Amino acid sequence: MTASEAHNAARPRVLVIDDSVDVHRLLRARLKHEDLDVVSAEGGAEGLEAADNEPPAIVLLDLSMPEVDGFEVLRRLKDNPKLADIPVIVLSGLSSSQDKVTAFDLGAVDYITKPFDLTELRVRVRSALRMSQLMLMLAQKAQIDGLTGLWNRAYLDSRWPQEVAACHRHERPLSLALLDADHFKSINDLYGHPAGDKVLEGIAQAIRSQIRESDVACRYGGEEFAILMPETTTPEAFVVCERIRQHIESITWARHPERTVTISIGLCGASKAPSEDAAAWLECADKLLYASKQNGRNRVTMEEIAVEQLRTAG
Amino acid sequence: MSEPQAAGSPIYSEFRSDEDMAELVELFVEDMQGRIDSMTSALDAQDWAQLTTLAHQLKGASGGYGFGPVGEAAAKLEHTLRAGDFSDVDRLRQETDDLIGLCRRVRA
Image 1: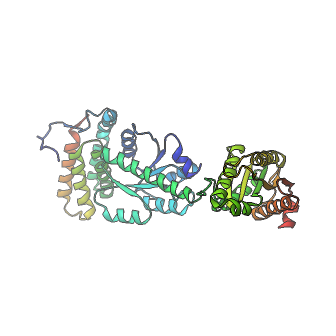
Image 2: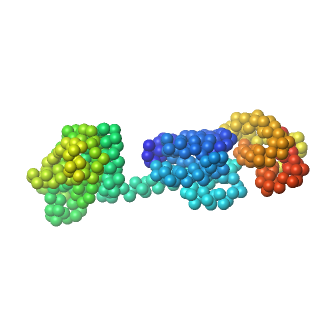
Image 3: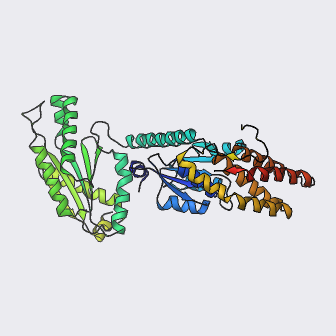
């Protein structure tokens, strides 16, 4: 589960790490009417394990615990890329202001003083959850293309290697298509950039309408798009690409009804993802896209790849 | 801060009318005799480390269950113990007895 999924779950999971049974009992009672799932861990090591198994939306952490104390838990959470963004609220005694300072230095977002004041506890938990949701949204926004609303190149660059590695590990099929609008420059030149933008938006919409939930569509740059299709063999991906190609060809553009727009596609797929070399795979799709352009545009060129091919091509 | 209370008069949880807390407060009160016994043993054995831990736990829990005065007495004892001066056994005994006296008066 990703951090954003942990948030979007109907009831965000709150992981309470404290060695006192009383604290667990009290927090459960106090958070009973909040829309939260409270999970208890009675020690630092147990808490880290619980967080790693199922990353919570927020952690409430006691500082003074035997063996692995709260500071150590904080350090290890922040050292783990998978868990580093989870907000941590420190549960602290009244008297320990130096502890609070150290906890903030280590990356805690807030503290709650024991004994818990009901209202304060609830608003601090809510506020920390809201804040981290906003941070997530911002991080996501930075990976979305402003014009088309598709994922951007930065997102593809991080997601594609992960997808290749995952499909390779599980011997699952995977396909990658690169799409490029034909003669796009002439559309810009003839009808102006606003018209060009409309074409890009239209292509993005066409892609979105033809792909499935599990596919990932990106604006790769300029007038180039990429579609990442996990669990999809080359012939299956070809059907999707062909549908998109035909759909775009059939669009009547309000700003230039006399001029249709076509796209060329390079499709590179494998029934068992063969290699962890994501870059070589991308080059393969690019090469096939170029072939589509060379052979008259408005077409899909596909290739089924195998381990040996990629290794020698790369 | 709590009202001053006569020795022996019951101390009720400030959450006694809070439905969510009623059961927890009962549990806490039921367990109190165990805490009292542990503190008595630690005091008799002059096991200050153990007594410190017990006072610390009681300090954290009492407030949470709505027994502020117990929490304050526990905090006072913990503070004295943490200062590390164990020569004044009478004082330590007095503070522990004060705390236990309050503990005996808690009611759900």
